[in-house]
Image (cartoon, rainbow, N blue to C red):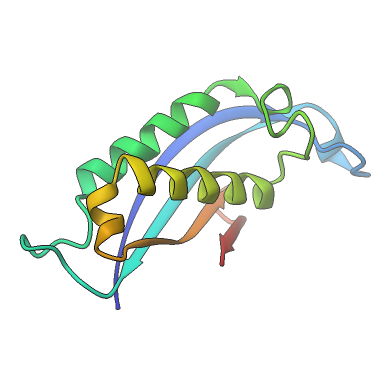
Length: 129
């Protein structure tokens, strides 16, 4: 099994609905998102998936949340923008990108293995299936 990973960062504000503690107040984080792809086969160039293309796709998603108030954006206008839900959101969105923008990788059996969202340097949530 081969794996590759890329990271991007973004800044965003949010609050957690129904949370009893400091996080129920409006605050922000400098998030870091790590995406890991996995697959059994490399392409004819010897790559699982092109880092440049994966980073471009992740960058496009990050642009939609960077310097935004997450509670105002779907799906976080309905669900809490917790690190866990943000990781799941990036996982689902990147899986869709894999089927469209990164078709060649998907055709080789590459899949999103996991997404980890770091809320701080010492706290993170991971979503994988």
